[in-house]
Picture 1 (cartoon, helix red, strand yellow):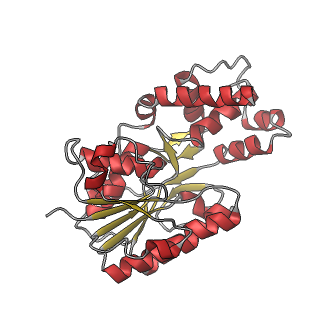
Picture 2: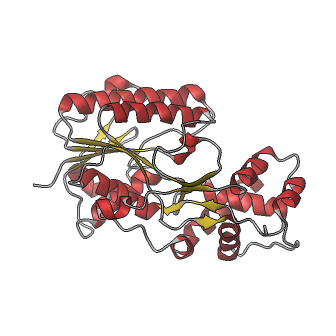
Picture 3: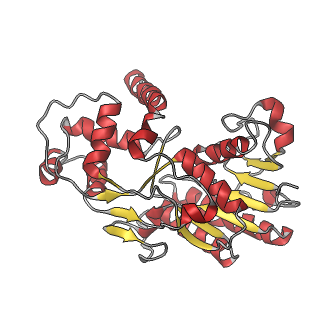
Length: 326
């Protein structure tokens, strides 16, 4: 009998790809016994036909309302916790990421769930540099309310013997932060960045979805923290050049080094923040993870990103259109 799986955040960026991985694991048919916990049951994950919803056991619950989670883990073997709130609202991030995760883990413990997997972020380490950093190697130094609340969420999961996955830059359909942020920096610079060899861990969101599922179903002992990124890091210049080429960005200026770029971005604090992150290593190693869970890390950065070209073009076009009409 297939394990009974609960997924939170199944209509979101990463959770939607976890649900897609579930479907792919059955050749595109209705996924194995799975319960989707959604704040809005009308918002089904991508690829889930409304006709399949009864088989998927869609349950309404809200992480900001712990009482709504009562009983959601009953009869479940594995919890794949992909839901989180990212934003400047400190009270909401605390309610969802900290208190909501604690309530979910308590329910999982009460129901006798065998494994809880939580999708966190390498941002819990704060600002770099981090060079080939092993899981849990650097001290935790979260620099934002979101990251602080996710550290708290991790603690609840780890205290219960669960698994924490820390990807760094997650790329692909649904990414509204990484590639759009790089496009914004390049647009302000109007020039490529030269000579920046700082290395960054990346992961295709499709591979991450497979990894989350594999971690949940693995028969191996996986408790603790794991980095989930493609084994080969990407340097900043390659990262930016690939994005510019893929999306046909017009960059008329001569290539800039980091200091020249900082000067050009003076007065643009958000862009300067992105540039400062690009300037130093954010490379998080975990060579044994993929083989250990039997998952495929994907084809690598450039080829993987090309699969999402159409989605990024459409998203950036809509974003530009929305700004133009506001």
